[in-house]
Image 1 (cartoon, helix red, strand yellow):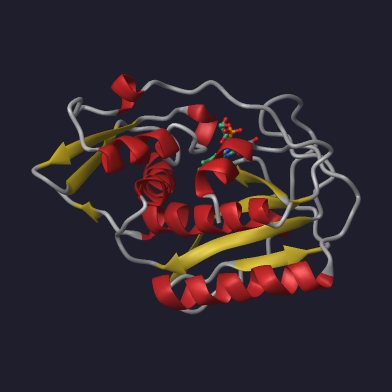
Image 2 (cartoon, protein in one colour):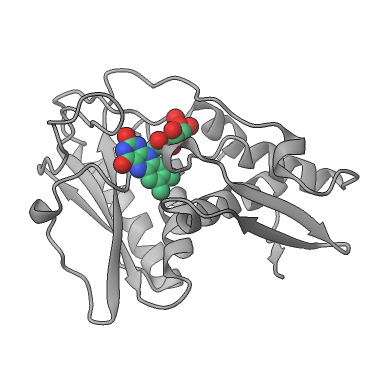
Length: 220
Ligand SMILES: Cc1cc2nc3c(=O)[nH]c(=O)nc-3n(C[C@H](O)[C@H](O)[C@H](O)COP(=O)(O)O)c2cc1C
C-alpha cells in the first residue's frame, strides 16, 4: 500500500450514495478488522444497513445517507481511547484503499440506535461512518511541520512521519498533538486538552509510523 497517497486522498466524507458495500469487499474488511481485534485487544465491527447518524443538525457533524458504520470498542484499559484511534485509522486507510469513504464520528450519531455488543470488560468509544461518498471530500486546513514538531533538526524518517501526521484526521480538526524526538529514536507525543484529543493522538501515531516506514518507539 502507498500509505502517503492514501492519506493524501482521504478526506472526511459526510454525504453518501445509497449504494451497499459489495459482499466481497465487506468480507475483506471484516477479515482485516478481525486481525486487528486479535492483535490489539479490540472489538471493532462493521455494521451494515443501519443509519445511526443525526439528521437534525445542519452543518458540521451531519452525516447524510450513510447506512453503515464501524463500531469502535476495545478492552477497557487506560490506553483504550488512544488505541481506538490507532486501530480505527488503520481500518480507515484500508477502506480508502478499497475505494470506500469514511468519517470518524464522535458526537453526531443516535447513541440509542447503536447496537452495543462487545465482550465483557470492553468499552465503546465512537463510530466511523463508511460507504460510498457522493464525492471524495475536500482537503481540510492543515498545520506546518514547525507547528506540530518541537524538534527541528531531525532525521528523514522522523520528517516523513510528521508529513504523514499533517494529513491525519482529528476531532473538529483540532490537531492539538505535538511531536518531539528524544535521543536518537524515541518519539514523545503530547496533546493539549480537547474533545477526543487522546483518540486523535492514536490516529496521529498511526500516521507517523506509516509515514516513517518503521515501528516507532513512542515514550516519555
Ligand atoms: C475522533 C474524531 C471525532 C470526529 N467526530 C466528528 C463528528 O462527530 N462529526 C463530523 O462531522 N466529523 C467528525 N470528525 C471528523 C473531523 O471533523 C475531520 O477529521 C477534520 O475536520 C479534518 O478533516 P479531514 O478528515 O477531511 O482531514 C471527527 C474526527 C475525529 C478524528
